[in-house]
Amino acid sequence: MTAALYGLILAGGRSTRMGQDKAALKYGERSQLERAFGLLAPLVSRCFVSVRADQQVDALRAKFPQIIDDADGVVGPAAGIHSALRAHPDAAWLVLACDLPFLDAATLQNLIARRDPARIATAYRSAHGGLPEPLCAVYEPAARAALEVYLAGGRNCPRKFLIQSDTLLLDQPHAEALDNVNTPTELDAARARLGAEATGTPRALRVQYFALLREQAGRRDEAVTTAATTPRELFAELAARHAFTLAPEHLKVAVNAEFCDWSRPLNAGDQVVFIPPVAGG
Amino acid sequence: MSSFRFTPTPLDGVALRGELIDTHCGGFACFEGWVRDHNEGQQVTHLEYEAFEALGVREGERIIAEARERFGVTQALCVHRVGDLQLREIAVWVGVAAAHRDEAFKACRYIIDEVKHRVPIWKKEHYVSGDSGWVNCERCAAHAHDHSQEDHDHHHAHG
Image (spheres, chains in turn brown, blue):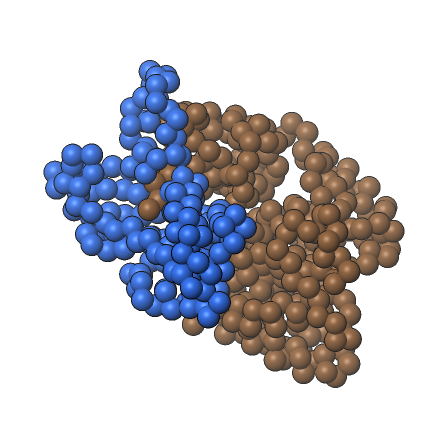
């Protein structure tokens, strides 16, 4: 049986080359950690942030569900991956570095869609050299025992772990999606690249529909490329396209699986849901 | 085990109650929402529930956490059905175990009331007449074109 998929954002690094906490770096209005969590959380059943024990109460990290590294001598990302596999041994984990400013929802959706639960892991080939990318990959429950053997041998490189394990390797849908940012120079370049995309040009979003809106739209979800900058503008555009009978004052809106304001700025890759009047119970 | 979940399979109240057994608790209160055969003058034949599960689980877990904090209860669980339901089936199950009965009753009431108002779940009723409709949505939709503002306090707030 395919294990339930949980998400883990790695935010326990020491950011030594950057000289400041990478998880807190901002592109536009959101920190890298918030952006990564926002991308991954809607695609998995539960989503956590991996932290070191001394980071639990850090203001940025404290607002997310956490998996705390259990200190048994392992350092680096392997510690976070191992702690997650140990904390929820029946789950598979989509592990994600927090410092991937170009990562998009399509890259994650493709990884999940093509995941092979019979393997130890499913990962992308690096766009730079073809080796597995260990920090945007799915680790199946069976990875736990294999990783423990690997760590017991004194090794802790997750890339080498994937190389020597039964890992399904996929090509990336967008070659630059997993470029990471480690130094202040790389950060400036990334901000310039994203800034050029953010000003005025249409954003690619995903909209999911439920209940009456699903029936009226005739679909469960839709990829939308739009110049709308807020959910209010987006709803007006979609209501015209699908002839929705519910007006915005009857709806709530969620972006990336969290309720939000109708005037929240929309970012590329956001997942938007308009919520009709509910009727549970 | 999470404190709020959705399931497409029939709910077993006895099994769910078993998840809450706790020797620290002296009181257990439970609410079951059942599929009934009528609503607002129409004969209902069956229902379907649809949920935005990613947000629904988060909001449901927030409600349970609020109930624990407000009433000091020890164990609380809410499970909501999704998919097609027939008459007499359990649509939603809430169970609360606490040291004493008072907090168990109060927390159980709080959880079901908040779940009905806040969790993104939708109910479609199918009627003997062959019609069907999304509860709480159709009336809003009928009003949408004339911008009628009367009685719109019920958005997301009745059920």
